[in-house]
Length: 463
Ligand SMILES: [Zn+2]
Image 1: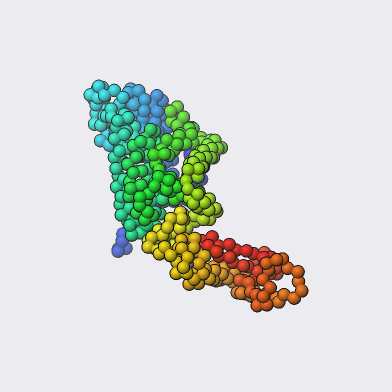
Image 2: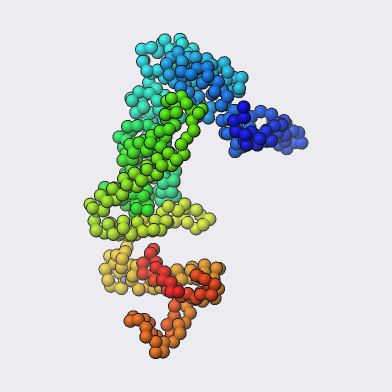
């Protein structure tokens, strides 16, 4: 029986005859007739279809033993007699199909610790435990052993965070990206597969607050309100550095909702007929995403109700579209996205309106100095520099795609026109940029750039 006709034809063409392999540095060749080529994209599917025959056979021989497979990890569960029959059948039929079960790598998890000796004699050569054992990145066993397994993993991750905090003291942006895109994903799987572990994750949260956040942001100590703000996603004004303790239970709940069909199929021993209901999964994913969004909105709402007016204003501004793109962008050197320690940490201070360090309390113009004042003070010409930089960047981009692009075009002299109040009437008035073909082929538009603040510059387009 061909399980997957299109793949069958492809594999037949690819592996139907032995592959010639040239021995490096010689003209000699070897004929490879076994297994798949290293790095072959279809190797996993090839294996999966190849092993199906053995799975079907085991199911037929021992229908009472629930069995599930993940790649070459085979698992059987049920009453002792069924598992014994399944293990014997696996040893009998497996090698004929290239699957060699290894007793020394096999673990038998039993419920009753007093029957350990009995099971050892029933399954010779296999390690028998009543405590439990790691299984596919999670743990099956007693509560105590599960907690001890989670504690070991937490210890590893705490060390990872300490290491990344050390790196953050010189490269905070890279450390932030490493944490945001990498380390957090490590414990996500455990949260989704192991219930009731929230309190065990507290050491992770402690090291985040004590080591990571001060190293990345340069702010010490991090107040409770600021910690809660950083836990929000960047699009909601945070940094996306979540507190694993608060999300552990919901992550597990969402995972069980989305995978309900698969869990039922494993429990009912119907994996080979399992046909995932894609509509149900899609709907469940949508529902979980909505619940997650609601939970984050609740946290944000609580924060907005309890924080200072200044932080409230910042969170509202940072929730604007695009205001956090610089944070969630990968620091790629080739694209010029890498920020120095000072640029990154000052960027974060500006983001949360926290006074910059090492800055005079009084501006050279005589007024009191603050972030807001620094952005509008005309002394030194920085407002013009920002304006011109934005104008030149836009000019260069428009010059590629539009026609008749002119920088600072002179406006027509005002004669007797009735213009709205506030219109500049000077004879040499200029705009920033004009170009043709922006909206349609011959239309001319004029662009005025208002860069009153550093990050949020506004473009006004006149058609
Ligand atoms: Zn000033």
